[in-house]
Each structure stands twice: as C-alpha cells, then as structure tokens.
Length: 199
Image 1 (spheres, rainbow, N blue to C red):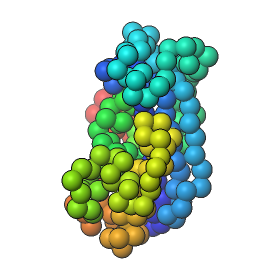
Image 2: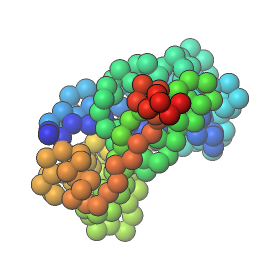
Image 3: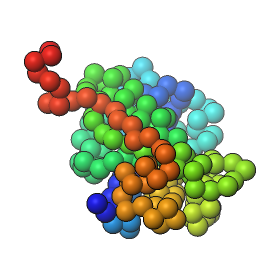
Image 4: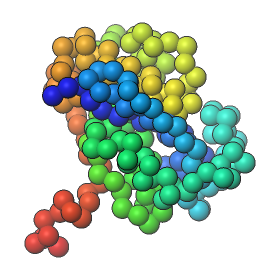
C-alpha cells in the first residue's frame, strides 16, 4: 500500500466546533503532494458569530464568508476531494470534531472517514520542546508557512506525515500508525455500512 492520504485543517469562527469558516486540504499520493484545495465556509446558523479572538488568529471575518457556501453545501466538494482517503490532521480530534459538529448542526449525516493525528506521530518521531504545528513542521523541514491559514496548515501536516513515514520506513499511513503506536480513529457511520438487521 502506498503512502496515500488527505491532510485537512479547519479554522473556526468561534469556540463552537460547528463554526467552520475555512478548510484547507492537501492530497498526497505515494508520498507526494498532487493536489490541494481551499474554501471559505459560511458556518451553520446559530454557530455563525465571529469572535474577535478567532478573527485575530486567522484573519477571517463575517464579511469574508457572506458569499461562501454553507457547510451543508460545501461538504460534497470536501468529500469529493478526500475520496476514500484516510484523513490526517494536527490535533485530529479537533478537526474531526468540526466535521461531526458542523454536520450535526446542519442536520446532515457525518461523513465516514478513518483518520490519523500528525500530533501523535510527531510526538513519536521527534524530540522537541513543543509539538505545536510550527515546531513539528520545522522538524520535518517545512518552515516559514502562514500558520492558521487552513491550506498552509494542511500542507504542514502533510509534510510531517511524509517525513515521519520516511524516517520510520513506513510504506502507508497504517504502517506509520503501527510503527509509532498511534491510533487510527474513525468518524461517521453511514447507514449503508450498518448492519440492517440491527436497525
């Protein structure tokens, strides 16, 4: 199995996990970046207030997403880009939480994906004072990126996984997880994958 995955990063409008206001995605095939995508997103109603603290971090304001698609409208493009890949994110619990919370707030099913956390991988790969994304990315040779830009952060995350896989001699994301003792998680449970007899 080749080193194939999609790295993903979200920025949020406020402290609600459902308030996704931008997403960056990077597709990796056989250990090489082959495609990327970036979209602004209009957060679901009730989760769409832009707090000053969040705006200060990522620079996205309410006016920037006026013409953006709602989460429910943007999700098909997101899933089409990711295909059936394992998703990778730095502090993946946060980003997977965004997918789940934004989908629930939009009254649509949470898409089903396996995922791996590059923060866990970095902790098993490097000896650093901090494992925050800029520090871990620097250890992987990915420096001077625009932290808190969702696409730049996804690119940094992808760089960590590719570098770590090379360092550990891992041929795939699952190999890397096994070699480092990291857990491959899962979000979503589409109806078509449920045992119909148990419903």
